[in-house]
Length: 360
Image (cartoon, rainbow, N blue to C red; front, side, top):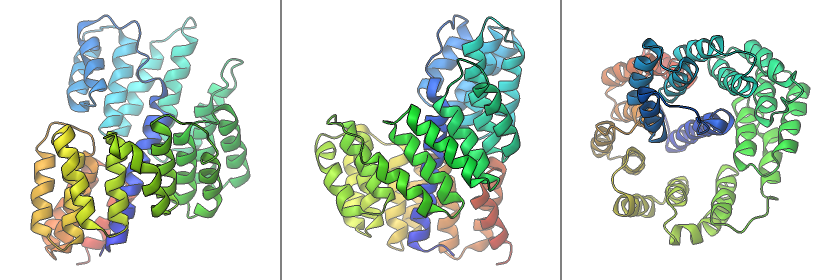
């Protein structure tokens, strides 16, 4: 059964998985110039709002009607990625590639990056490497994202030297990308090699900047280094300015410190400043679970899941399963685990949890 620290770690890893997708894949996600078809334009707008279900429905119609096939299939792949339907996403990106021609080298490279990340998420590491090879073989294909994804594929196959070479090449091309350093760290942590990844987090602290985003990002780095006092110090100014991501992170820092009163207060401040969101309800549910108030946690999770916003939905489903487990309602927890695995088949944590619950 999960301890409080285990649960916080699980949620932290799911957040890093989102970073992986947004940084390494959606690098050009907003570069959707040329969309003129009615449903394609509407689908892009839904993607911007992270309304992935709505976007998928619109792009499906656009693709079926032959409306700008490259952009329609590309958008559909992105929507499926947001919904964690990676097999469907892989097929959509391949379909988009099939509609390209030699006059579209940038579009091809863009689609190949999406495809490589989808393949990685499906544990198709050799395919990930091969797709990145195709990107990097082009004279104009020097891509930090392709180096990162290929390095991630190498690492999963136990080729640590090749992985490090690619990670270092990615960093050389994007030395000021906090997300890149975090993604590299996550790759090592997933392989129980976090000691090798910590050096990249330390390097990220050498990025110099005085914008509001910079102390927030430094706070993120200290959070993943588990240096919570320094994380709080960095986050103090952006939180005072009601910088939304910094406020969410401060809530997580309080949770990690087992300061549930201040964590709950931070999520309530977020609700007051930005309204109800699934992320707020998830944070409040985490606080309630850590205090042993499982019914209260489930009420928060249900409220979050009733919202149309797709952001953070996977964490809500995961924590719903855990809340029932902590209540010792193993039958319901097993049912929720089965539903979770059906929704997110590539999440190994869900698979492991289902195996555990089948023994209860």
